[in-house]
Image (cartoon, rainbow, N blue to C red; front, side):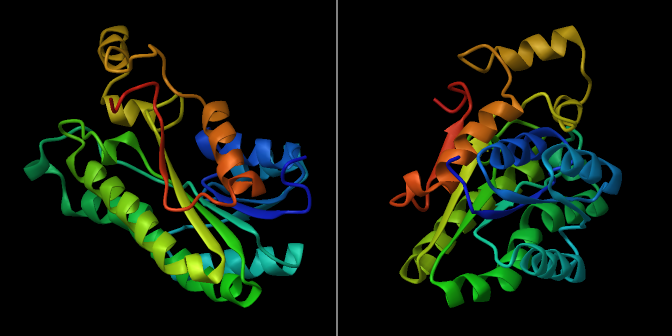
Length: 246
């Protein structure tokens, strides 16, 4: 019960890493708002963990404001925000990525962090505490060819995590990130372009531990960084990547 009494929001929690984090947080005693653009997926996870489901487009200001307000009203406070929702474009030469795809990647992966901070930080400052965890990627540390603008969006997120951490520390607010290698999530086929045994083997060959990451791997790392055990940890971008970035 390492999060007993904590109130948490997890975005993109209807599947993949977000669902794994939401499940683990609930098992450790947290009340969890399961936010996802897919209402049915959010509701399925929320029903499983006795949480609260909400359809949220994290790139939309009104939706993000509603998410923060809903958590406040439902739980009576917010202790943890996990910015997990993300998207990518298909592997494509950088000059061939459409402007619409570029805008979507930066809206979901970057603007969402800004919108959430705008809505949440005043609350955190008023209580002199709070935790934010951003789900970044090894792509922002060791870029893969043809995932160009996705790589850039995650590099942005790593820097945003550190600048938020150093600015907000005097207010008792911690901000960290986890940097997963690709895992068995709905985004995997997008990263690879096509999921075939040959492409998967090539992908796995870049990971020294020889396997993809799992939602449980991310949940374990997220649990530590969002718990009081990490009270002296802020501004960290933790590689949970099987050695991918070595």
